[in-house]
Length: 345
Picture 1 (cartoon, rainbow, N blue to C red):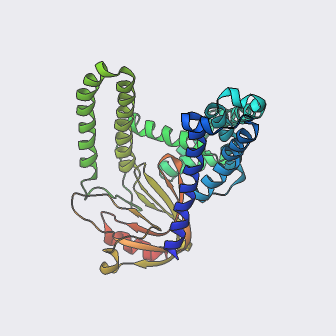
Picture 2: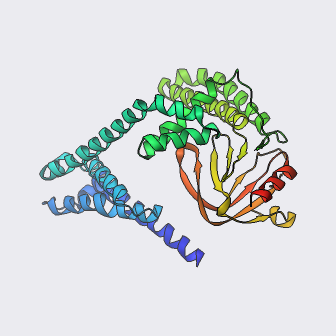
């Protein structure tokens, strides 16, 4: 049954690529242009329907995200693609229709700008709320933002970037505080050492390749430089977020994060079972399992595996949301952690 679902999933992608490739070949190759009839209005209208209805529906089926909001955005994008893909000499009778795509996309961009203005308007209040919260900053900040600003993907991305820059630049003089209800995840691993090695490698690669590539292609060297600088900042922010956001146990929930990469709030009432059997813990994780394990140079296994009653939302990099029904956690003080969790349950 799973194999059948995966096969259908791939079929949607193949059909999508066929629709895009056939329309591109029709207008952007000599072979395709020779196939066009004298009166092209019917063919052009068919291509517009392909790009604005068929392709978006196939894309949503492939992504398994059937949503009117995404469909409208993709349809507007399809009109814009048609504007650039179909030569103007054939598209002229339908020029007004394709302009609607730009109008819709412009309206969406304006809406996102208004959301950003709202975010920065309430930013002082958000910061004050975060300072008063006993929760780890990764969680208190997102909670405060959700209270003041409507949830939107662009807001999630901006907040994720704000956290990265905050941890990369603003807390180097502070020291992490350890409490009775917090547990570190990284001290018995080589994760931070590995990330420092990656930063060194990126810096050396930037110095060496950037100057060589600068003479070959200035634009490409600039793009590579920006990507490398961003990567270094991401690693620095991730290291600091890992140090300053230990797993924290509260009265109603457990707050666990692994740097900037992923975080999750788990309510005690959502936990069905705690698995401690070494034979189970050493097995390969299923796709519906999220792990909070600091990677090491050798294979490591979780301290516990939490089986949830139903899928619970986790936040990944860039604010991406995903649901999991099992959570694998490895902490430095595993015995104290297990004892405290059992008390809460």
